[in-house]
Picture 1 (cartoon, rainbow, N blue to C red):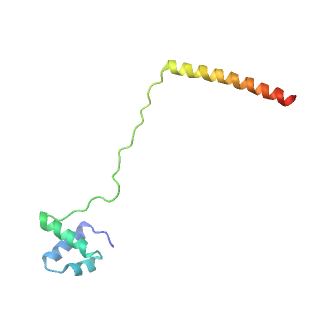
Picture 2: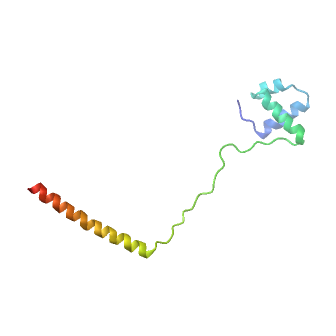
Picture 3: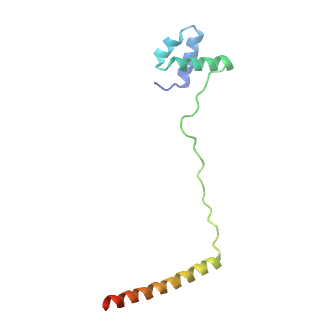
Length: 102
């Protein structure tokens, strides 16, 4: 299977208008007969050469992260909690050290 571009699609439609068979065109372009039929059907319905969509997943705009301002009271309470935990850890380390020495 080969990707079709606008030039190849134009050629396919010209050949169909000239009376060439679907199977013959499909062999020449190395696509399926069904794909030729789809292009021909789209052309007959609209009268305009069918165009291909951009392949792949659509790209998204990058997400910008907005940081919220930190509430000073929450920050102070967190610092107090850390200080109290630090003191407890020191006490536990001292107790472990005294047990290990014994």
